[in-house]
Image (cartoon, rainbow, N blue to C red; front, side):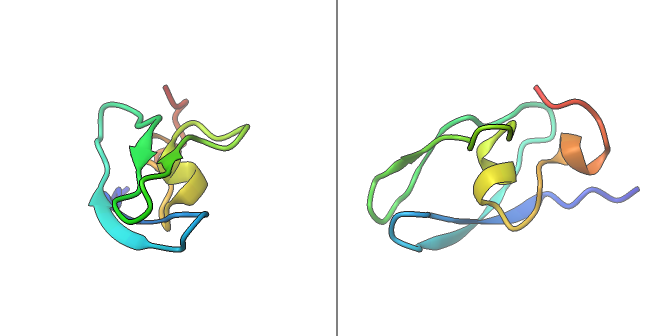
Length: 68
């Protein structure tokens, strides 16, 4: 199974989008929007910011593994 490591994060406050490379061995719980400086946190039920605000879910979820 090929795991996609690029995900486009969309800020829910200002709509700014940026493509980021996801870490394969850890979850990212916080992310600061470079445009409006809002600190993003995972939505309830999601394991990381990529699962909440990314165009692609994190590598662990893509592999059907438990996330952090």
